[in-house]
Image: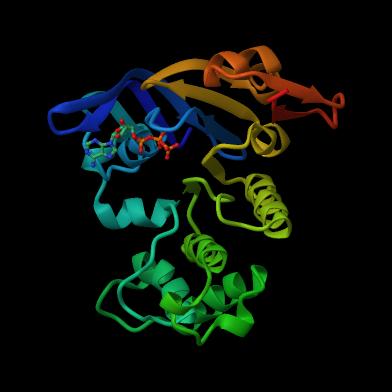
Amino acid sequence: MILQARQLAFGYPGREVGRDVDLALTPGRALALLGPNGGGKTTLLKTLLGLLPPLGGEVLLDGRPLGSTPVRDRARLIGYVPQVHLGTFAFSVADVVLMGRTAHHGPFTQPSARDREVAAGAIDRFGLTGLAERPYTMISGGERQLVLIARALAQEPRLVVLDEPTASLDFGNQGRVLGEIRSLTRAGLAVLFTTHDPNHALRVADEVATLRAGRLLAHGPAAEVVTRAHLENLYDAPVREVGSAPNLAFVPDHS
Ligand SMILES: Nc1ncnc2c1ncn2[C@@H]1O[C@H](COP(=O)(O)OP(=O)(O)OP(=O)(O)O)[C@@H](O)[C@H]1O
């Protein structure tokens, strides 16, 4: 087990968003977090990453309290892909991906030949080579998403946490990122991702946890949690089932 939340309460100073969360992230497995807008997914992710302090309970990294692990070690172990943001400084795409190597070579030393090689490999993996010298501020939202994923992978972490990794991607790139999540777990990494598409959770996650109003409603094998009945309850909306396993899919039902 790499990361574990025990009876975690999370939120912001003076504002609890959620509580009673027990989760474990293990090597070689992907956990998807599903839930309605404002349900607390991003806040929970930030608490699991140590970006927000727990309001109760604890987060353990390799069995030790996350807070007692030096930030540099955390940065080596955990890669984080936040929701796409527009950076202020016009670093090149190549430089942004190379920043993923900072935890390995330190903030004040030059990247090594291996750092550059790993970053170039991550750029290539996402088809970004043609954009490498472009400023990060002058590429599309979807391209920025791919750059942030490449940066996290360049870090060579043991756990990757992705906040809505497919949100701004076209259909082809959604498939590419979902495929990448599968290859990360096959390579033995632990993966945690949030998504608004239950089909993505069903396709690539081993386990799914659902969060509404800061509470886990369900947590278990993807095929047991991603069902029409549970999705209708989770989103309080009608859902239609299309096809059957292994090609089962769900769509919002407006008829
Ligand atoms: N910086 C903040 N300070 C106080 N409350 C916040 C802050 N950021 C978010 N919230 C509130 O915390 C709750 C959970 O928000 P969060 O972003 O974690 O939800 P989410 O499930 O990720 O939502 P979405 O699917 O819309 O991205 C919401 O009520 C939100 O308004």
